[in-house]
Length: 272
Image (cartoon, rainbow, N blue to C red; front, side, top):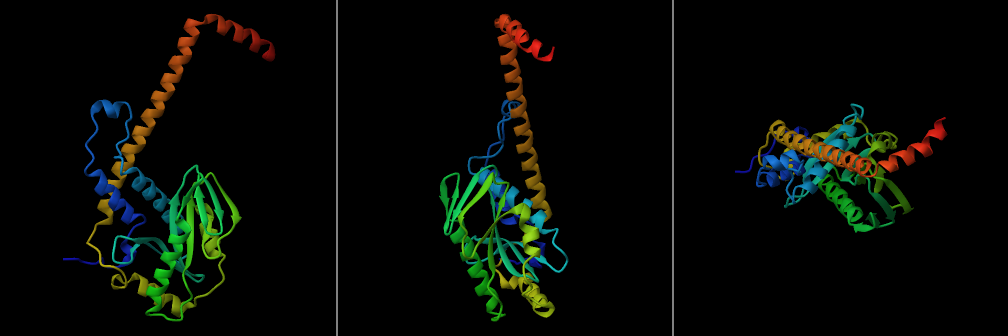
């Protein structure tokens, strides 16, 4: 039987993608001792995207947690009949905001009206963000018909750069590091009574698609174990890369000692 959570506030940042990551990793064979020694990633081929998505949503969740007390933040809200969810839903004096987190670390973002490109590859982020905001607006207006529409936002985690040729009409695209400041600068749209009513509505599990019961703390512990394994593997790969580089340099010195003498002859006068 499907059971709902007590309140939607209990859901943690990245809960939906974290559940998918843990599910995918449960079928990945354990690494051999040799694989661990050389820093082979513990992630399965289908897990990498879920892992990066989890890290991105956790990062944005930490930023949103710093909003003042008159702002309420909800994470991983299930909507619709399938597995779709709203990464973050923020409610405050400035209105309602659906925040779609995208972890595009070190990648170039190019935007022109309805076109969103990541390293030259077109992505449907703008269309999807508008769709999410429309769904939330429709859902809430069934109980609060005069509410202004939700504002769709795309929060980018650690992009290399964001270039706007033409900014979208509806969707706010922003570096996640600037998200808190931007939200707090929004003009006031909701007063105390309407704000309290809206928060109560969103916090009610009956407003959303029913969920299987979960223990967020247990889920987070599983993610932390995966995260530690990934970071340790990455550190080992970097160590091996450094050792190989040092070995190559040492090999050149042993094989071609005259290069060392030549280098010293050139460099010494510069510091003489």
